[in-house]
Image (cartoon, rainbow, N blue to C red; front, side, top):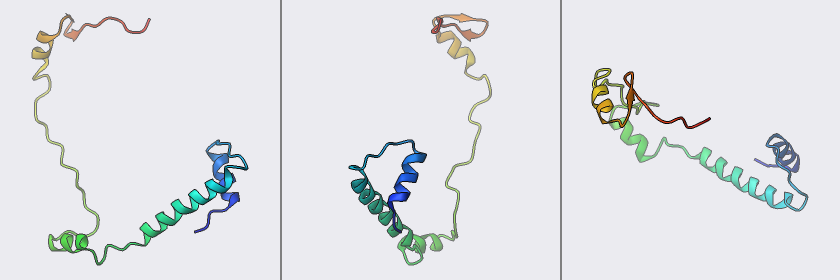
Length: 102
């Protein structure tokens, strides 16, 4: 994929960055190198990799969720009394603090 001077002008305009004429050649080379690297990464296929083989061996197919399920570990207000007992100042079941903004 080529990155042209027109692309650089459009990108700098969208990002509200002023690029001088002296900076353009280096910036063009940098952007072309970045896009070249990204295109190499996009070409990599996991179909023959050991990661894909391991996932298939474990019975996993495609994308899977690695986030743990939400589990309630304590009941609501189970620690409120303990926290209020430790607070230096309490008013109406709230921790009382000094005003920060005036």
